[in-house]
Image 1 (cartoon, rainbow, N blue to C red):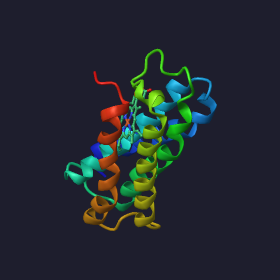
Image 2: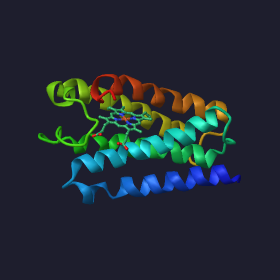
Image 3: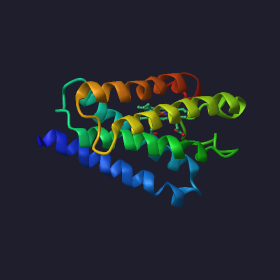
Image 4: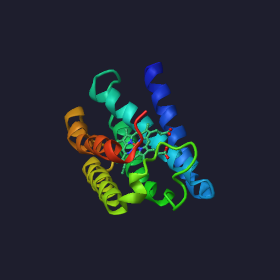
Length: 153
Ligand code: HEC
């Protein structure tokens, strides 16, 4: 494993650890959902790096990236209680103004991630093409949700 790959995998493991503790952070839903999205960002960095050929493809790393997406998609929607639109958050008011629309984006993310999880089998997508086929639709959901439900900087 090259150093860069090691860093990516360690970063991802740290992201997963954070996602695992979100239940304890429920009294700070903004921090919890940002931690979940940070794990998504780490998984996207690893997955995108492999897709671009910057990181050698490895089925276990592919599966770790997909599993992180799947875990995040399952919990992310739990951290948007009324009133958590205030403060240091990138969450757009549209989340609360159009809750059904936000739920629909969450459902697309969860469906793509769970399908990728199924496709990755026991030891991860066998090769880069299989990984791209599984992860591509998950990546497609980032922009469509962010466009409406994340504040633009
Ligand atoms: C269902 C909607 C939704 C989907 C799907 C989604 N995001 Fe997000 N994302 C958000 C929202 C909302 C925020 C802002 C959260 C906040 O600051 O409270 C955010 C924030 C982020 C952040 C900043 C996290 C931080 O540290 O504050 C990153 C990175 C990110 N998203 C990456 C991604 C990537 C990559 C994908 C696709 C694989 C993705 N997101 C899919 C809604 C979504």
